Image (cartoon, rainbow, N blue to C red):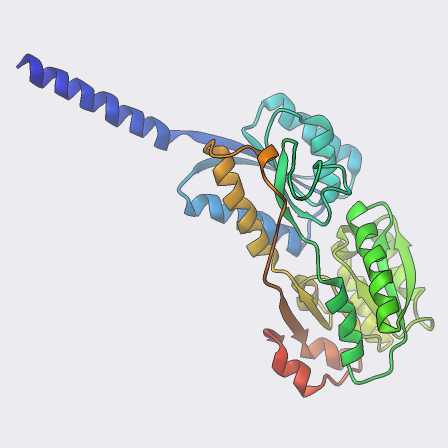
Length: 317
């Protein structure tokens, strides 16, 4: 009988321990610079990855609404409440979080160049409490789309916020690639979303098409750019597929939901203690897809070559 009681007690301990692991609730603070579909999709993908792994997570989801002082306050809030992890979406909020939080894992996504943004010591090895995924786009292939539209294009306007590190990196890349393609890049910078429409209008008469990289400020007011493109027959190439759905002509870009999911898979390993952020490289999405919008093409006065439509992974009609 004594042996039976000991055995039962041991089973209770083992089961209790197992239940304790399963019942652990993680608290993750999410800080996002602004609300728009691409960033929202990245967050949704992240949360789905953790749900698929069966983790019990309580989220504190915050949005800075494009204001850096708010982003800093959100980061301080997470530091004070000692969350288990922070998900920082886009470069500005990632920088705010990294400036304030030094001893809590920070997972980043939708950050174009974490090394240039000062978030990691190297994209090949973090060396800090920050890890995650980059949304570096194939800028060369996106600009090359202008050469496949069946109309002469030599001058391309690029809309971006010069205060966003991720945008500056993309524009510098665009300048290099534009020269290779025989294109002249005409810059139009904004500081907030209310300036986007006028900046787009300022390009009319000076360019043959418009390019919008994955700039959070411009994308948050993307319909303004799409209206100018439609009103003045300017082909509009974008940095990601959500903007194509919102009126862009085409892109060769990443899928932000999948990028967020990939970030979530990294987060799972960190939460389980399998690896530390400092030991990880920044990851990139390997597969990109060609997306075209036939309705936007008609509105922008573009007759897309059938060969380009046939190549598309996804056609919006």
